[in-house]
Amino acid sequence: MTQIVWAPQARQDLKRIYVGIARFNVVAAVATTRTIKDKINLLSRHPHIGVARPDIWPGARMTVVPPYLIFHEIVFGISQQPRKVQILRILDGRRDLADLL
View 1 (tube, rainbow, N blue to C red):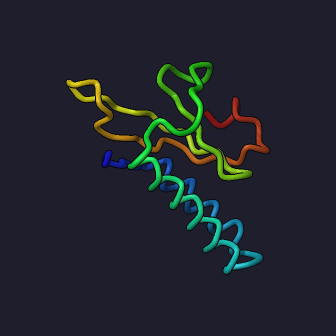
View 2: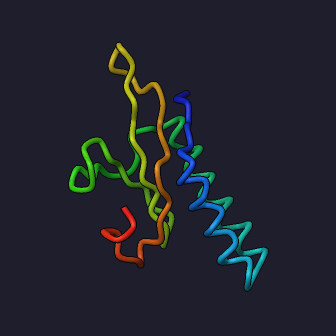
């Protein structure tokens, strides 16, 4: 399995998502963040899921948990096998990404 590494900004993004939803519904906030974490954990077994987004930055990949977008990169080892997946940002896809990235 490939190691998952969270960037501090991605952890902050997830916290913001939780707090934003929990103001209205704690159960929904827990369910949403759990779904996002489950998708991220899936990357440890299948690091190539999602779509390449070189228009954002070289090596960028995006996985979707509607309406949220998980931006990540695969770091390859010497043997060109995925060594780790870096979770870089988790953003609301309804917002202007150019302002957030």
